[in-house]
Image (cartoon, rainbow, N blue to C red):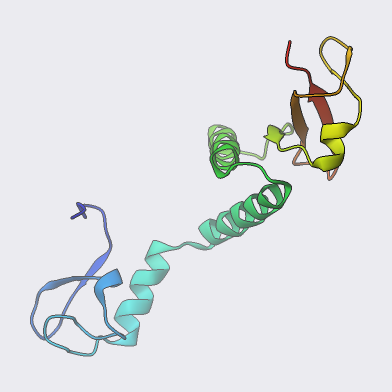
Length: 150
């Protein structure tokens, strides 16, 4: 069972018990079945999700969807999103450099063609990593390859 210290709740007008919003059954109290008023629930939900939060949620969804389609691991995507949030919280305006650098899996063509290492500039064919990097402020991103030795 999880601890619900900061979870949002309302008081049931009938049984006077604390009812968490995620426990409501079709708008009814799970203990006594009393119908909660729409005003009570909607005001609580507005308090939970502010308008600025909705914009961030949508932004996170599209960032996650874009990188997931490229094959980036979900953990890497969440790390980029958290770094992005930390940058935006530390500054009062949107920072100019919203950069990302992620490892993506190689497709079949990448595995068999000759690649140039971006660090040592040597040619290699087998192994290595495929890295995508770019900036959230601009729509372009670049791909580089790194050999096993680097």
